[in-house]
Length: 127
Image (cartoon, rainbow, N blue to C red; front, top):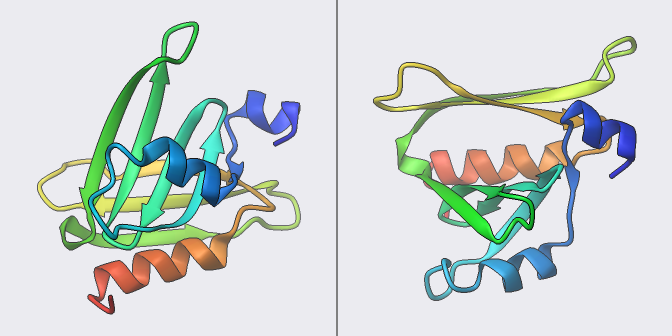
């Protein structure tokens, strides 16, 4: 991820193998990471069962907050691609029982197809 994108809070793809190893303690048996991206130090991870938002806190990033959303709780989602004059894409997830959707900005090079496929497969129950 470029420094400018990081400073702007935009997301870029990260190595799935490294994320899988890092999240091994919180993943259930046979749960696999399908796509993940980083926003500065934080992560948004799409597994075959849920979406996990990892918020790394403090100076060292050793303290972490895990926000897990099962696909069955997602009522709607949108993935907006970047345009000619708009340098970023956007992900919006509406969660049942939550008044406001979760929004994240993604960089132009983010794996939008992988994100859409992961969300669609999870929400539509095609696992």
